[in-house]
View 1: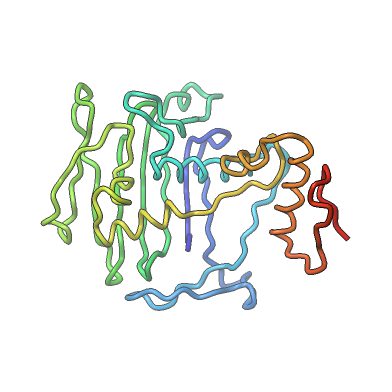
View 2: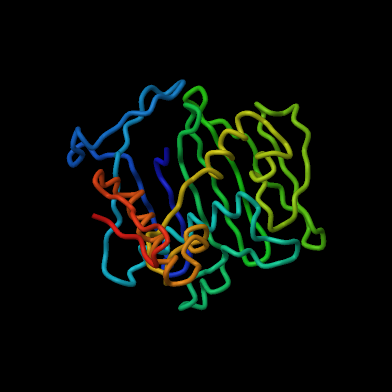
Length: 256
């Protein structure tokens, strides 16, 4: 469960953008709260549903775009050695930020442990990266990135004291350390966090201009099939009990 996320200097956001699911004592309604158990910090309360609203072109979609791109980065789907980091899209209307790093952090609960992941990156390389957990209610550093000279093609990892027996390894300068813990280098406390980030479900509805990734692949087809699949997707989301398909071979799905 995501508790807090924050990013800076991404697309339309020059300054810090913060999002939280943690309720305030004065505004949270009991029926909109859920509790997530942690091993050492008791039950954490969070909002079941959180909404982002604002005027057109105010940046709402950019939050979704960032999370979608970050998930793909964790899965190591876009970056190749020496290439620009695909997610690097800074605020370009100020010379002070046009080439400045992007900062991102996320606080979340996975496997009943609270984590905080942070990364800072520029066009070609990651400037800093760390993962902290709270297994006993106290902050515990799991790892941090150690930068090597720019003439080297890779950086290395420094494990925290709780993982001091783990063997360090190198990653390319545009590759996330946490990606290595999905399959290549399993390490339970870090792998649990990596799997959580990799398994996030990010979607942006059915507007062809802004639909993202896997959703776009589903809708990228001929007009008749496009209409059929959009109807099916809407049905899957809405769960309308009396919705039925007939004449499957027709140009568009029908309902009654």
